[in-house]
Length: 246
Image (cartoon, rainbow, N blue to C red; front, side):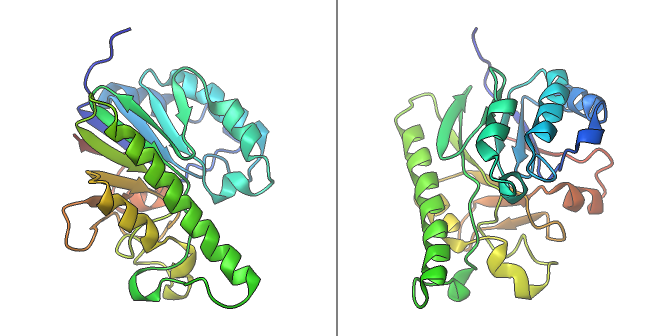
């Protein structure tokens, strides 16, 4: 089937689907399908990381008639069932990216969960106890997974623009509103460095429920959007999804 070029992206994060949500999301996904060409869901697909919640979401997503691209979030890892969650949701129309990339029309999408570590001059370094080094290593590994995914898109002649799909933030600006004490747990500048190296047009993330909708990576034109559902609701979106034209 020939795919048309993408012109409009809808994005949301932190939908936290529960087992009691049967039927709750059908109209939402129908509306998104009528307004956009692709839907991004930026992590925390489930509320407690349970595969039964993921199955509810999978059933609700049948109402979505446009391609869906997801990444997992920290809630989806809570019970160690992230692989089962991915299996429950993923099908021919719903793609769960974890260090992978895909192309729709002339837009390339690369997705990872990301991780914490802090921002700018307060970025944690690999020094001290083994536990701290392990935390930083997770941050480094997620940035490397994103790097490889974005580089795969460079080999695709169809790709004119690159979009990153994340759960954790790559910049401080879109977590502002959260307590400063938890900034190191909301994202990492290592992700921003990767986005800059790979000429990404825009990045979408969630996770910071009390954060800020929009920011840019320092000294670049790269837009970053915090599309966590509570952020969109606070910003006045009655039906919480953000539209972005490529």
